[in-house]
Image: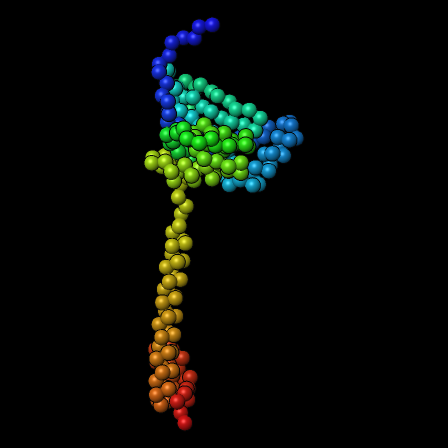
Length: 214
């Protein structure tokens, strides 16, 4: 059998690791599949329950997708840019996160053991992993280690209300500190033999102190 000539492949090509939630389990799926899906949704971080990898094809215009499942791994050739455009749109909408990764070849043997999607993608990229590595843990590692960082990531949460609450809490704390400082000065003055009918600056009029009196 003769294979057609092809362009020289890149030794360590750039991949894009994609983190998302898997498709819902179809009606009528085997019980073990439904139980696995339910368990993953309960244990894993929303938006990071599945991961796969994609890169541009060398010999044609399109994308190569490596999508590991619990039972097998799909390797898909998708022509054109439609799929990549869809992934980019999903990422901008906050429904997935994408990290550009320069693959590497570890010098030492890396035991993978578990055949999960996160471990399979880590193996493809030459990234470290453990049997219990989750997609979110792999995402955090890649985002921190890769010089390109995160290409797309979920939108930042609106922290305006939290920032306002923190600012108000700081103002309240400063006011309480000033009040306590005024009270301390008043107590010190009482220790020096002065009788005060109020703590100056505290608003507690009529509070008498006899500290320092014979």
